[in-house]
Length: 409
Ligand SMILES: NC(=O)c1ccc[n+]([C@@H]2O[C@H](COP(=O)([O-])OP(=O)(O)OC[C@H]3O[C@@H](n4cnc5c(N)ncnc54)[C@H](O)[C@@H]3O)[C@@H](O)[C@H]2O)c1
Image (cartoon, rainbow, N blue to C red):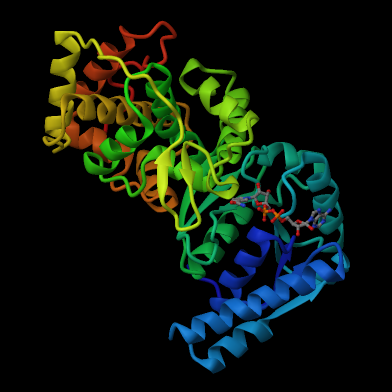
């Protein structure tokens, strides 16, 4: 089944995400009504959208006529009631439960037949639905930044979300050229949860004094073919944003040791070292984007038992990562097995299917392979053997995996 552009799509919030979603919608031929709280904000969003479409013409990605047509499809408003003729409204306002609830309730009343999609990253879709009183019509549509470019949308079904709402959100995102994964309403959905060990296990390697940030980044890029190492990436995302997501997912999941925040990363944020935007994070960044590690790690020789060496070598061999030093392999296998483990827990807990988890991690974070594809390539027994060997080296049981056989990769 497919859908065609008819009624306008309403978008509430003309900030980073709202404006990006408006661009994606208009680009796909959809009329858009973009709302924000005052005229200055909607004017700014409109100016920025015009510039973006003009830039696409300069880059030969669209013609002048197409650019004008896209611009004409977007109208702005500061009157929420103007969205009453929309049959789907996407909310992209501040990440605040109470403010979102008020706005969702208002729009639900003004547009009594509209599906109401929330772009929340960290709040419960079910709780938002029940707080605003329109549980059946509220669905999660989690876009990624930049929304016009990132191909993934996580569609989240709240406890009482209707099939119609899920189907409509899915068809709409697909009609805009997005790849959709279906996710249960669980903390961090897929991407923000399964990606946590990429950062956290890397920070723990630093805390353990095993390697410096550049060595960890190099190991993950060279052995794992990750596009960006975890420290470079968290500097780009913002260490503060990364810490906030970790805290939110960890708290909402009931504080599992696997996802406990890193004290070292949190103290970096407390000192105002937020990454590229503040000039310093895990690395010191200069204007020309030259970087040098900014975290001093007194490294020590890692003691790895024979048993762990065998598990690491087997894991790396099957993952086709045969180059690199033993330290590189240790880093790569420790971080990657943490990600695979989180993906296995997510499958066990019914967050999403293995296929959707793999798709989400490849499209939402550019992983070269999905975690369960990796597990399948390596062999699930070897993954379990490594996790169990790593678990013997820690006191917090964080490499404990779902029982062998519960997840088949
Ligand atoms: N920025 C990201 O990378 C990202 C990625 C995925 C999801 N999200 C989610 O998208 C949502 C928006 O994030 P953002 O980064 O675009 O924020 P933003 O701060 O750039 O924009 C939020 C906009 O909402 C408007 N707003 C605030 N209160 C409002 C109200 N009562 N009514 C209407 N508009 C109001 C603000 O004026 C602002 O223009 C959040 O829920 C966030 O968690 C953000």
